[in-house]
Image 1 (tube, rainbow, N blue to C red):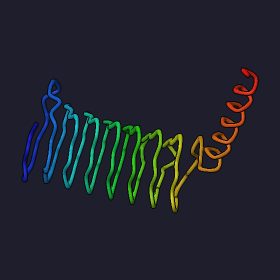
Image 2 (cartoon, rainbow, N blue to C red):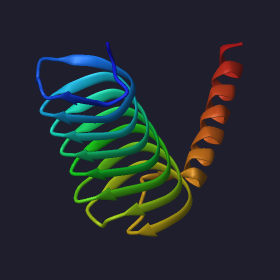
Image 3 (cartoon, rainbow, N blue to C red):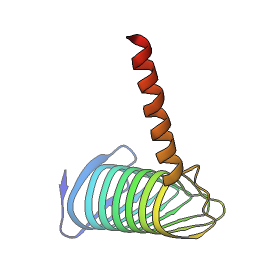
Image 4 (cartoon, rainbow, N blue to C red):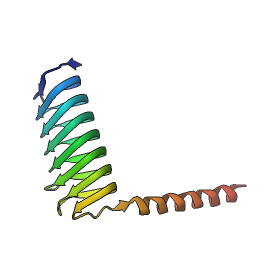
Length: 149
């Protein structure tokens, strides 16, 4: 685990450290497990869990992100919560909750819950579809329970 109030540079592809209380974290061709920092930049690398003010991912990925500002270019994110999200140049995300989301035409999001959106926003499942799916799933589950009795 790296504790740093300054800058952590993770460039070793074999390393996967935790970074706590970091100011700037730069990952190039490497990885990290958990990151808690002000600014995180990932280029051709990845992280499991990021909690930061600003996150920039270029040709990399992260499993879970909590950030004020998040920019993903040619990379991917599993689950994210951001005030301002920008996906561009082939960026992808599975599930995102954002106050403001901007998506370029080449990007894709499976589930998007956003206060406002800009760009080519075509999630596979928006909040209405998710609610309908949940209601349908609950209905089918109720029928199956009745059938078992």
